[in-house]
Picture 1 (cartoon, rainbow, N blue to C red):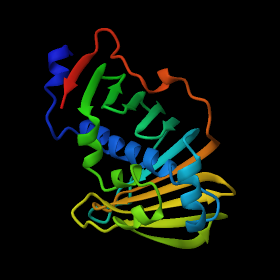
Picture 2: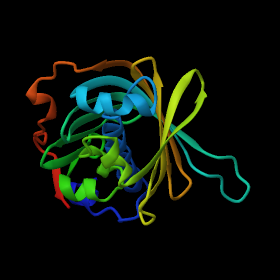
Picture 3: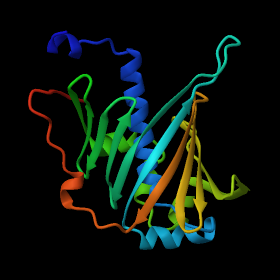
Length: 229
């Protein structure tokens, strides 16, 4: 297929929709990583103040609601992520498709290796499209509560949970549950307004890891199509 052919894919193409969902999920992961702590609400604020960077491996299972009596479909992906406050993160999806999402503080980049295509968006615009972005700039629990209803959720699967619901009702997010094991972020469950659930499990979490500046820099590969939105 020609380069022009790849760029001319319909707006509603399933893979394009999936990429948009991954961007939204990536933002949610990075934002929620800033909230991780060991003991629910009491520990949230201390982590927000004390954890500036982090890295981990992740596995993500996306479950779509069943249609017409069919069994719910799931899609599993895995990779690595790193973040640095404020507003910098990098997600590398390794399986089943290679994709990279980088936020450098100004621009949000999405690189699809299969399409050899880079999507470039203003980060403020991209983050502004989801209520979860409000968490990124909140310095403490009081600021979070201005936009989210926060409550401790029952323990489950050996983890302690915090439930966050956006007070704004016009967004794509219904709720986010953040799970903790000891003092580490262990899980993230995202429920969107379409009934789709993304369950992310983290391993090897390292808080305040030393991350090179180049981690959050992105240069489009030579020959890749660059689409600005």
